Length: 206
View 1 (cartoon, helix red, strand yellow):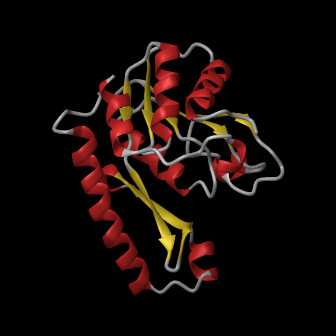
View 2: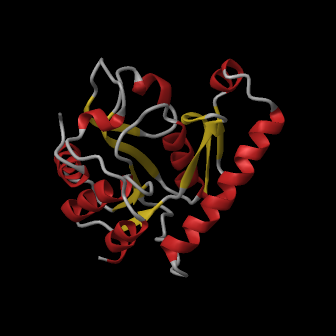
């Protein structure tokens, strides 16, 4: 175990980041938000969200073949899609369902509040870990479209080789632990319980 829970992971990540002037921290709901909240608190930076949704392979939703984000960002991993033999019709249906959920979460979490202005700022994109990297890629593209001057992708844990896969998506990649043996993100947390909508809202409003 590397982390007690997501809050502990956020504190360790903040220590790894150090000072980041003029930063905005954005967390990926749900699980990335408690991590991002600790980073924002340590840096004295504003906290916002970047809502993204994984496009899971039909019948194997935990396996991401891509992701979508706010503002129309879309990432597709053709290797995974073709290996899983996902048809165009199946992909379109998965995307339709996830766009409905993305809209629901945006409305739920923002509650009519405008997003934090990112134009010209350094934006730290924070999640609780990297698996395939699809959602992180979509999030980086989303904040780039919103005008971020510099994008830093920061996570507590990611598999070896993740930097090669995500190079070019962010200006800087920061990680606390990069284990060679990587069964799942939750394997590196003592407590990896599901983050609720209420916890996301508490973090954003706190």
